[in-house]
Image (cartoon, helix red, strand yellow):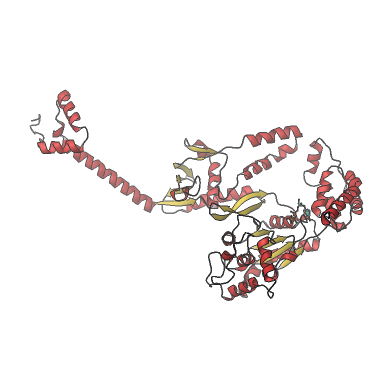
Length: 551
Ligand SMILES: Nc1ncnc2c1ncn2[C@@H]1O[C@H](COP(=O)(O)OP(=O)(O)OP(=O)(O)O)[C@@H](O)[C@H]1O
């Protein structure tokens, strides 16, 4: 009996045995308390059990309330690794103060998702940031700085996995970074990001994401962004591979009318009225260009200049790539954005020309063309294979996955099958137009064809001017470089250009060959002129030998 006269309930021996079985160490603790403190724990046990039950109930209710609260009173944005949004957010976070103050953080020299952002661009951006300073110092100092920048890459700090809180526009935001179990089997470092805020109105999260996107896009400025189609694990994706300063159209030496016509045609195509015109007439809204001519005549350069001028991203794909399958080609075309330039290089690859050879035995236009027409006659709802080919057609692209690479029918299917996105500009380049099937060249697939050729006298003069004319920053560069370049007046350059052109025969050499020669004398135009005749002679001899190999 205790002081209050109430005797605590005494447990029956069977109940004590039960406690011994369920609570490990119970007999030991009970004996210890009885012998040293004269307390019989069994008498308090009902209170202890009641307290434990109460604690569990409170915890359960708190968890349930929290769950209810987060479900109904918290807004959350989920950001996935395989989307541009991931890059925007990580880029933005790395510039926030709270990221560098966070006690748990990831320190890295790379930020972007391995899917869509090549961090070499970070180095290029750094190079651009330092350009002004670099231009004003001697070579040795510049080089020491540049090498040190390469060695000591810039650190980026982002919050580590877990939960982090920060304030944005007066609102408390929770940022959660966690492992993505679903993706981690396929991708190293697969993770998901979440942004949450109190309240059912997610507008502050959307504002934050929009700001992140703006910061990322502004960093690109007017640079030309290039994506390359490549295999990523088992799938094919467009991977952002580089961004370049835009190439001015004036630096591409080509007949000015031809050049302007090309740009005007693209502009007209991109105009919303044209889009309406196409849709009113039920014509697929697409435009295709074929740039053809010998290697080094400016086909790629013109495409890059057009993309820089119009601010369009370039999606680059070489049909020569060994890893490219027909399903991969279809998947890549399927994931193109609405407005872009798709640059398909080397459309004269083996698989595409082989198709034509086998068709030569049959009537033209080729089967592939006929098949494709059939596809379209079936209408957009016609059943298609995953690769975009006609399901029952004889030219199912999947069947043509030969060692020669992409087949003609597969190429035609992506150009105008259902997978082909509307609004894109397709630019194909080839050195051998004569090898291409008429099916590929017909209007709708190739609407404009531009011929690139050997430089005529005007082009030779233009190339000379483009090397020796004074352009932006040339002055600073030449005054600080050890090998000083004399600056010439426009009139002098004109005179020198025509001297040079008089020594180089028109219609024999590509712009790349002429440019290559002039670059060897980039600081000495007179030297270039003096050596021109010998250079022409050497090149003519080399070309002659190449054309008539020793018998
Ligand atoms: N018409 C041109 N005007 C200015 N530069 C040119 C021209 N043609 C070639 N060049 C120069 O030659 C190099 C190669 O040019 P480019 O890649 O555009 O040639 P291409 O015709 O696409 O060659 P390929 O068929 O091998 O892909 C570049 O450095 C480019 O500056």
